[in-house]
Length: 337
Image (cartoon, rainbow, N blue to C red):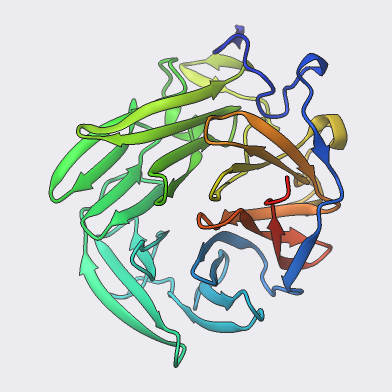
């Protein structure tokens, strides 16, 4: 049976499902800077910005799969992380920044945690090894403080787990209320934290949904959410979604903005099915820019496809892996929007 879920009537301009009645200004000539003109990788994974450095994940590499780039000159300073079954190797790496500086690697299959700190004067790495509490079926981790770990568990009804000084907090409103057996697959999403304003932001990948949370004494409390309708079917207890995603591929936070990478169908048209694995021609070209009140302020239409995204919470600059036509690292300043 086909169903149309209408989550929130009257949402103004959510994602690419905007009506002409609720038009939003589009920007197509925003300048950008190229930091690294060619990134050699079969598939760049997640990217992170901190204090003048971009950490990018070489997702199909088994050695030094995290690379560190100085954004002032594009020079690669170092790399770390190896895939394998050894005591200091990772089988399922979970990547996150340390708010005090440095980069965490956790293994999603064993309680291995390593903090990599870069000495900027020598570009050398210091590695701090430790263990952590392994939470099964975690897809994202954040280190909010040294004593606070956040786990995104999309298969759970309360999909946020925060462990602070041994105390556990279960929060997070699952955006799918339907009781289905494949919730873990359906509710995959991105999550990011702005340490300056204390906002935790979650966006779904496969359907349009965006939510902002604030930390309270009893855990994360939903502040505001944007929901839109989407088509799905249920068969044998499983939710089936269209092949082409209608959610946001990437999420980045800046000082004033929440930035989503997704297709602007009014400008780009409907996405076609990939012709082969890792077909970059189907990637979106557009950045949907929201404020922290979840008002859509602008849509930035780039002249080429984007693959990955991260933001600087001390400014309004975003960093992206662009496909133009090779992979490159670029910086986009949203301050003038």
